[in-house]
Length: 306
Image 1 (cartoon, helix red, strand yellow):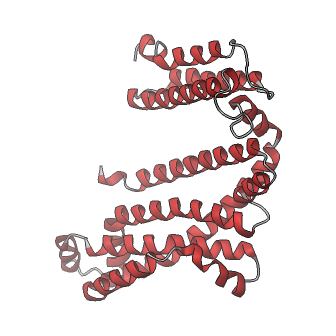
Image 2 (cartoon, rainbow, N blue to C red):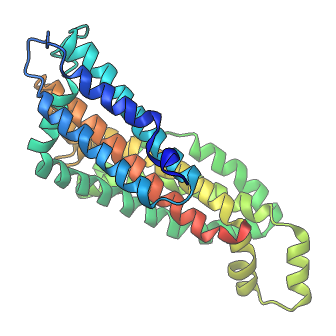
């Protein structure tokens, strides 16, 4: 790529526009921490410029620039609506610089809560995958049993897992184990259904070819059918992962003593909407990061399909 394609892009103009907006007079009655916003935006711009030098694929560079440009536009509009023109209530909608400053102040506390939430989510998620995939392979292996199990799965998956929280509190020793149990239920049914769907959808010619080669049943399941079903399994895993974060946040807001859901609920009860918005944004970034890594894993394991 030429230097023009790497560096003369609309994203960099949006960054300059964001910086110029910060020189407008503030009309907010609260402290807006303009310097924190400028430092954050400059950090994003430096990362984009550094990455632009090393990224070789034009599509990857365009994606990075589009994301950064979107961030600059959101920060510009947010800054105009809060700090500069005070259109939004500055108590309910703090300026972006104030949120960034709050994150830096609470970073140690936030990272502890992120670790707690991620640990709970991953425990429930991986436990569900470990149980659902082998079970889905064995049940889906029989077309008759698999067809009946499909309707049973639809019945149980239609029940929101969060309704099991009262039973979990009554039966399990800690609220952390209740949260893992809810995540397990949220992930199990999509992964189980995806695995069965993948097994039932395997091309019959592939199975017949394996039978001709006298492939044993365990080898048939785990070396032939499992790889052919991976796309549907990952589809179920993606659904389960997305729902897991939603349910975990809800569960933590009900009775947890740590986690990002607890962080948001605790400060919203005191009317601290700066920390509330900070928590919401952190959850969004964490979900995006986990989903990105999971998609990378999926693309790596399914690279043979390309």
